[in-house]
Image (cartoon, rainbow, N blue to C red; front, side, top):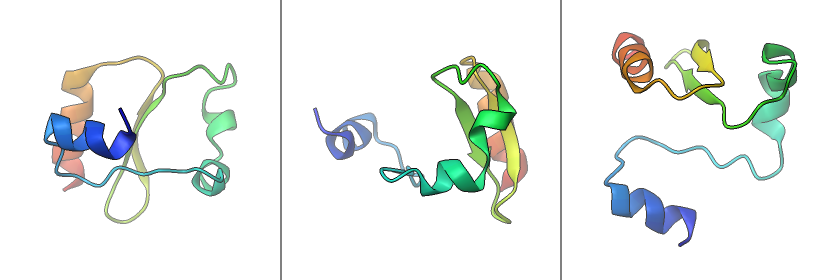
Length: 71
């Protein structure tokens, strides 16, 4: 399943970033955030382009809380 199809299948309505050339990765200095470079990593970027949440573990409640606070 392609990513676009998966997003549609899940009913996701928020923008999903596809960083195919690594440009955003470089701008947010992802490697320095987690020296282990563990994947997956969850990031929430606020409307003002600041990182409001980052974690290398899946914690849905924390992610949803960060999204709510960022809006």
